[in-house]
Length: 140
Image (cartoon, rainbow, N blue to C red):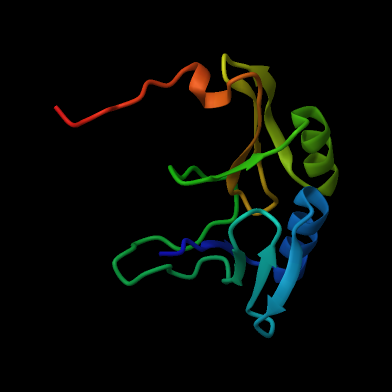
């Protein structure tokens, strides 16, 4: 099985520039003016040009909205230096919503891209998630 990440945007060139400048991703393929494949994050990321207001599926009542919105699915970019990565992302056009803060497993900052999609930049410290996780040996 393979997982692909798809992000709807209303301006493909602007999105390519943001993810290139903000996170160092590189375009490996373009699909005309409607999409692009970016690599450099461990999984392919596809930017798909979809007009503001268009419906994502026939069963969805509302249209696409590129103002800041909330969705339970978002991207986490794992980096070696959260402060430097946040500065780079903001310089590329991200909006910082919560500055980096420290947890037992590492540091995290909350941002959104220029298209309203939430994302996190995180840096593992020490044991990372192992500092707060338990191992499940078998189902009850």
